[in-house]
Amino acid sequence: MTQTGALVEALKRALKARNITYAQVARAIALSEASVKRLFSQESFTLKRFDEVCRFAGVDIAELARAAESKEREISQLTLEQEREIVGNRKLFLAAVCALNHFTFEQIVQTYDLTEAELVRLLMRLDKLKFIQLAPGNRIRLLVSRTFSWLPDGPIQQFFKTQAQHEFFRTRFDREGELMLFVNAMLSRASAATMIERLKQVANECSRLHEEDVHLPLDRRFGHSLLVAIRPWNIQAFRDLERPRQAGAGVQVRRSAPKK
Image (cartoon, rainbow, N blue to C red; front, top):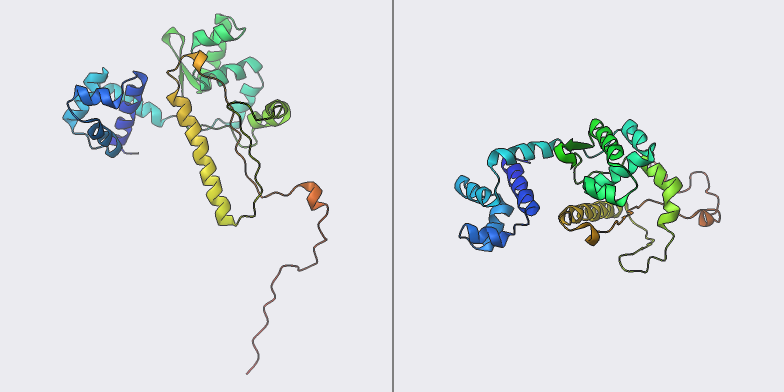
């Protein structure tokens, strides 16, 4: 991302954090809403226009530059050792998940059986792990990106497989806010690659909406879990019925050309 693009993204986040809409910006700087949307989508601000929007939002360019620089340093995954430490301490794991879900310090204490002193110690540990930054006033600032994910088959995913997946699937998936689809298909490698990219987009959209809803009160946000998976696979019960493969089966033998 260019420096200009990073500043525009930082300004978008500042507007969202203040619940300022494009329509409000448009009225403040005497432009149409469509023109304001175009300024952001095309990153076509003049310095004067950019400064006008900043002043209306109550932020300065230096503050946005610091926010943009900080955003670029965000991590998308933890190390194996960091995940092991987090999953090895149930309360530290809880604090990490609450931070990912944008709980405030006060909301964590109100929701879970943790003392303030205990929670401070847990958050300080997450701070040392570079997972969050514990700011003055016990403000929690995430240091992970929107595309953050746990390590494939790492300690957190292993925890899910061994301890949480049975709880996850203990439902009919027919209530409001629930859905499970199980689809079998014969796909080429190219089609499978296309599906993988689409599933990544779904996961990214879930992360985007997660951030978009941060400003809502806690009683209007609910924990949701999205499980996305695809792999070449056939059920063992079917594989047991397969005929033994003959040696060389499926291998094309090229005949030599006749001698002239």
